[in-house]
Image 1 (cartoon, one colour):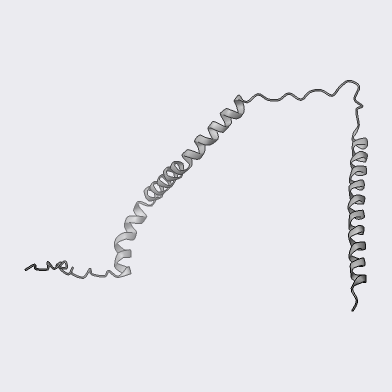
Image 2 (cartoon, helix red, strand yellow):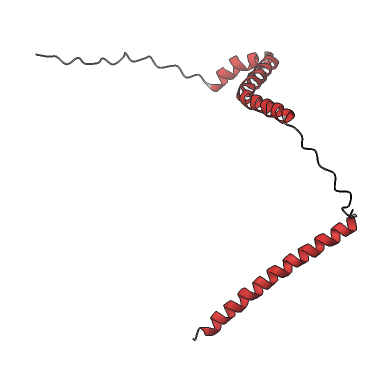
Length: 127
């Protein structure tokens, strides 16, 4: 016959005495105040160290990208052909305005065509 082996629960622990906040303040606060600068320095160094650990892979990738960018040949812009007309700012502005006006007119025509089609469809619907 087999016997079941029962697991024994660990012995109950004695209750931890609850300290009152005033007692904690009286004992800890003088220590904190005496070593405030050291504590701040420790926390700051720990934070910097952890931040640098998390940023290290990104910094390595950035350095690699910079090296690749510096190693890549820079395309040289070819000078305009000698017979190409040189435009001043006002001429360039005027051409751009003409081009944008032409695009706007094209869009207006398309909208008018759509409106006409829509009106035709609405006119064919009988109430």
